[in-house]
Length: 408
Image 1 (tube, one colour):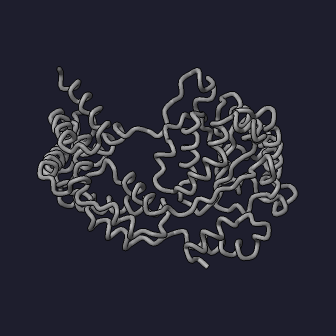
Image 2 (tube, rainbow, N blue to C red):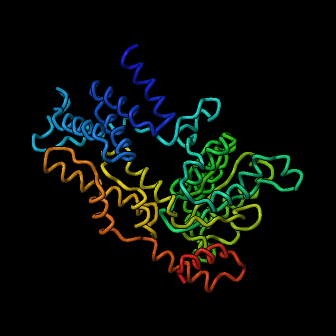
Image 3 (spheres, rainbow, N blue to C red):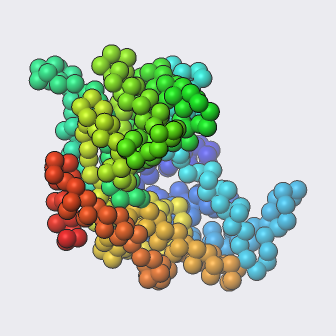
C-alpha cells in the first residue's frame, strides 16, 4: 500500500476516533515525512490538547516548526523566507488549503443553475453549536419539530408559515445558528443583507426584494435568512416620507404575506441586534411572529468557540476550560479576538526568534488582560427597553435573562 493510501486510511481512522493520540501522531509523522508540515502541525496540536506533556508530540512539533522555518520559497515563486524569520504567508496558504469550508456547493439538481453564487448548502448542524441548550430547545419547539412532523402539524392545525427572528447582543452566533437550522432541515441557505436589496433608483429595491423571494422559491427547501432585519425593516414611523427604506419594508411585508400559498418550502429567518427598531408590522402573525433570544455564550459554548478559533494552530498547554471560566461575559466575537490576539503574540515572538513557538496559556493570559467584553452598551439599552417598553410581554425572555445575569 502506498504512503498516500496509508495516510488516507489513517485520516479516516482519526476522524472516527479523534482521541486516539498514538494513531494521530503516527499520521502526523507520515505527513511530515512527505513534507506536509502544516497538516502535521495540526495533528500535533490536537494531540497536545489532549496530552500537553506528550514527548513525541512535542518533538514532532519542533521538527515541523524547524522545517517550516528553514523551508525556502519555491524557485520562481517569489523571494525566500528571511533567515531571521518565518515565512508565515506560505504557512497561511497551506492552512487555507486544508481547512474545510462551512459550505459545500450544492449539486446541480438542488440549486438552480443561475443561483450558485447566492444559494449554498450548509454543512453546519445544531450539534456543531456548542452549549446554548435553551436556544436549541426553543428552535426545536417553534420550528424544527413541527417541520419534521407534518402529521402532527396537521393534527394540531398549526403550520410552519411565518418567520423566526433571532435577537440578542452582537457577535453571539445568530448567523451561525441560522446556518445550523438550514443544515438540520437539509435545506438550501440564502443569506440576504441590506446591500442586496437597497438601491438608489426608484423601483429597483422593490424588484430586488421580489427577486430574493423568487430565488428562494426556485430552490426549496430553502432557509431565507435576513441579516440585520432592523436595517431592512426599520420602523416606518421613524423614516422620512421619501425614504427608500420605507418601500423596502412594504415590499418585505408583501412577500411575507404570500407565505400561505407561494412560499411553501421557504423558511424565513431573521437576525437583529435591535428588535425594538423593527417595524411592528413585521412582527405580526404570519411574518416574524416568533422571537428567540440569543444571549452571551455559556461556559460550554465558550469552550467550543475557543477550541474552534485555536484549531489548526501550533499550541502547547492550552486549557480550554480555564479560558471559558475566565471569559464570562465575553461574546463569541470577543473570544475570537482573544484567540487571534494570543496567536499574534506567539507569531511576533516566532518572527523575532526565527523559530515557530506554539501559542501557550501565557499568550492567552496576556490577550484576556488586553480585551474587555464588548456587549455592555447593548445590555444598557436592553435594560431600558425591558424597563419602559415591555408592556405587551415581548421581551419577557430578555427580562428573565437580565435578572439571571444580574444586569438589573
